Length: 302
Image 1 (cartoon, rainbow, N blue to C red):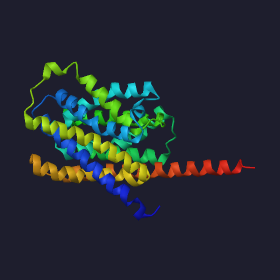
Image 2 (tube, rainbow, N blue to C red):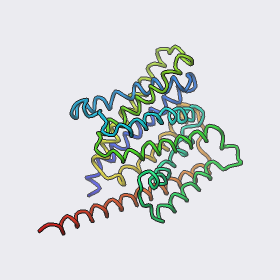
Image 3 (cartoon, helix red, strand yellow):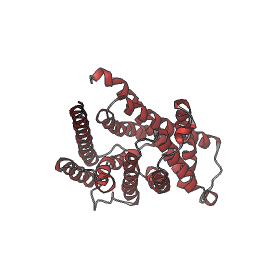
Image 4 (cartoon, helix red, strand yellow):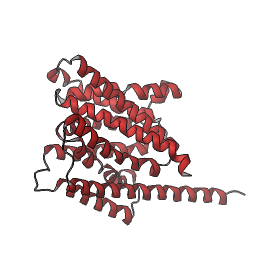
């Protein structure tokens, strides 16, 4: 496939990751004024809008009906915990630091694909995982004081979200919109019992920021799914790392955050390189598997 034919997918991916960054900016802003439970609950409501509209336009609300109820229920139960952890980290850490840690997620998904999905991971990908986690250690520099509660929460959230995303592969026949809808239903349901105890009556601007942030989250997921439908994961996924640049600009302009130091950039570069290599190897493996299937099908023809 030519670079020109991949251009629409790349542009959509760049837009989707920018939209996700806007969502995280809203979460960080509100995290300084609201309890994390309230931020997560209202954000989840906003995130339901875009994927619901997507399902309705693609074939009706029946697309939201999960075929694997246990898988969706598992994701819905785990999502509130992951959401609390990541929203707390966004509220405390500069966006660039939070993203740098979050970029370890492809490494975690690769490691989890063995026990969860029964996939075979070769020495090349295991080596990339090991090098990637070395990058995480360089970023956090244990003993430097940077490995605080917020950083640990972000690492834990990356692990949980890695698991939540990995098990999507166990339900390949479900429409992508159903994954976004039921996760956010789970988040809202998980926050609801706690919400009366932490509720702060929102001001008009706060409510608007929360609504926009939630809409951005749902729109980002929809755009990302559209990008993946137009090009291979190996083409689309690496563009997620442009969020580090988005976050650096937004953090500096909106929150007055200092730019990351050289060790954070070095560790981030190692994690990004490892993630891109893992995505490349997975793309190659999928191509080889598809080629073998086609050969087997051709050989079975009379």
